[in-house]
Amino acid sequence: MTTREITRHMTITEVAQMVGISVKTILRWEKMGKIKKPLRNWRSWRVYDESDLTQIRQLHEILTEVT
Image 1 (cartoon, rainbow, N blue to C red):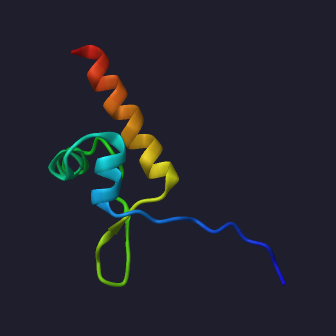
Image 2: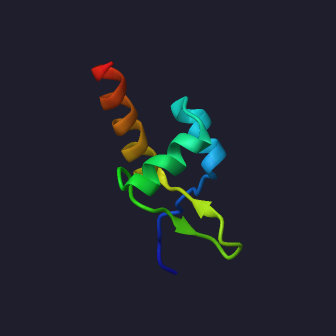
């Protein structure tokens, strides 16, 4: 039996709530190319992992420091 890391996938709503931004903001950043497009599940829903969450948090921090 091999050991593998279990990755928790989050919905766009969960990520938005964790970061403190709206779902529309995440979609806008994705469309503008500021964040990478997430993977999609079998329903074609966006699924985010920890690296996606980190990228979105970092962008949010950078943008809020400027204003």
